[in-house]
Image (cartoon, rainbow, N blue to C red):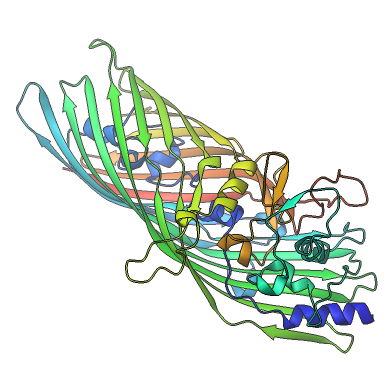
Amino acid sequence: MKTRSIFSLALLAATVAAQAQDTYLNDRITAQDELNGSARYVGMGGAMGALGADLSVISSNPAGIALYRKSDVGLSFGCVLPNGNGWDSKQPATYGEKLNRASFDQLGLVWSLRTGNDMVRFVNFGINYQKRKNFNTGFFADNYTLNGLSQMDQLADMANAEMGGLDNTNLVGLAEYPYENDENTSYLAWDDQGNYYNAYPSYSSNYTRHQVGAVQGFDFNASLNLQDRVYLGMTVGVDGVNYKSWSEYAEYGSDNGLNHGLYNDRKIEGSGVNVKLGMIVRPSAESPFRIGVTMETPTWYRLHNSTLYNLYADLGNGVEKSDQPESYLDYTVRTPWKGRLSFGTTIGTSLAIGAEYEIANYSKTAMGYPIYKEHDEYSDYRSHKDVAMNNHTRDNLHAQHTIKVGAEYKPTKNLALRAGYNFISSRFKKDCTFDQYAIYQDSGNYYMANDEISTNYITNTDYSRIGAANIVTLGIGYSLKSFYINAAYQMRAQKADFYGFHANKPGVEYTTANQLNPVEVNLNRHQLTFGLGFKF
């Protein structure tokens, strides 16, 4: 108990100057693989890159707007129904918030202009709001197989490593003494006498996270129809990020008493911009078959993070808490390039079929820090790029492949039935970790990179390996003269392996004694989308 008490006092005494971002949080905020948009687009599984003539293709293939021959205004809305890992979606989730929420998904206008020119037959302009990512979800992860391992194992070993005491590896770039370095997670393992403590054994843990908000996308488009054979388009996209989360990690000892816990209240806001170029070609004038190609530049995000923490521990006389001051960090994220290849055709006037493939290499996601003209507090940091975290991202993420197929069938002139399917591969490597002992390695050396901002200030240890996603969609639509109404349902099936911390030292093989078993988290969600529109 004495060691536990002293260690807990060290935990409570620790102060954290700022909460930096990491590979997994950057991915959670900026990676976009959700199926959102107009109800027609969702009903067909988003496989409309070559078919075009829908407001939501403004972001998947800008050339699709060129297929409009009439102007169009439409909006879509609905609700998200997540059932993540045991949450009862009808009951309040963490901290009194409800997971079921209404969602305003899309509002747009296309202005189609017939030129009367044989070469350029239509010049179209579009503007569209589309929810790119919906953060409203939550999950919990109970782990009853810690087998004596603890989050504090990682912190204590990191503190030992900073003193050069970690065996079986060659560590480079160490701090001479942790107090001389900025305060990071390893600092939590030291007391005020300069001693670090081995972790006490823990046997179970639980983690909860609830998050709300969205990435709001605004697209501005111009497109050309060349002789009804070639369609060209460009879209400038502007994203607005609004993310809030509340999380809590707690560990328990053999007597089921609380050992320690960490509460996290986070808010991230900011904006991003990208450009999309698209083309659709109809190879034969006698055939409706067409091929679409899209290139999307990286999205350059500039974000602001504010975080509030509570650290607490059982000192033997009940639970004590330490309120942390709110901290701030401005940073940038650059997402990878994306490429899309799509195919589409119609059969008579009753059937349309589409398919699309997308590739994005998420290991190329890069993090950095903004340059201020008058005052640059980060002037000593490698041209404002976070080299350590960018290498960590490269080592733990890889390319993601997305396949979309969809169809629309019209049994009558006014009624449309739709269906679609998406497969989205995992962008996380099978052996991905959040190893803060050595954030990256080069030529056989392990680098803790304590001269980088992110590794100086990381205070969380949890991470998830998110698996592949399968999305099934169904839709229905009805049109009457110029008016139309649509509805769509989608079911997303996806799981993740959650780790509360990384239990292994670099260069040490996994064994039953030092391997942390993951918790499988259910990320399934259901979504309903409804749409209204008018063509003129």
